[in-house]
Image 1 (cartoon, rainbow, N blue to C red):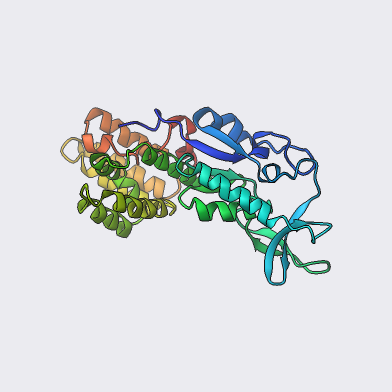
Image 2: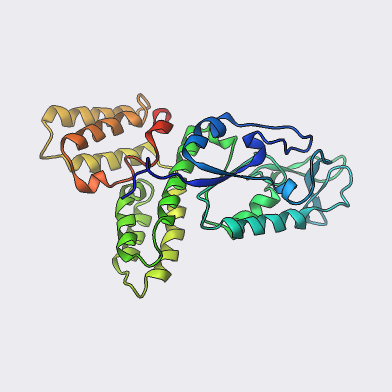
Length: 319
């Protein structure tokens, strides 16, 4: 079993966030979290939809604009120049090229090509813009590579969204390491992620368990696709503090014959402190990991819930 410390997922990132001079004015918008932290742990592939569509830099500004009821990507000063199809073709080509080879995508917020949500949509001179657009590249990329986690650089400032995104990136990368016909590997993958699934949805946890329980060599290929779609949908859900506490209580149950009453009390007090926002998630997880080292349990040692990504990211210290 490969640990999160031993793998290096590949993600795609908007080139401007890497400091490349690809913005409309030839400028850069380097993101330090990506370039100084993630770049040490992830393999990063730059993407520049406008440049790949042949628009060059510097270039006229572009915007999303509602024209005859449809949202189009056009030049701001000359809306007759429609770039929608050119950028959409780049997205489709990139999605086909990268599908199965990247485990995530980070894009520039509010960009008419790359924004995930709330991108301004012009309604013409004198009319207030709508704030419900999605960048053309991201829209088409997600349609043709629907399993890849996508996040905006601005949303990564939210510790919970940041942790959720990287949990999904590392989980998908572990999936890609499986051989398509490896039945035992498929079962092991599910086993190693049980607690991550339990923390998000008991219903999805049971449904995924049933998919795995009835699998055979003949049905594996079909069930893999169904499993992965539900697995990634489930991981997208944010874990509440209450659900984290339920899972940690479940883990504590494995030590019921090993821990002294004071140790059990100490764990329960930490769980309560975490639920009351007094300590971050890393604090009770660290104590559980300490007890696991003292009293090894093979099932728990294989659970990615305890170490979903490298410790050096320290994401659970702020959630």
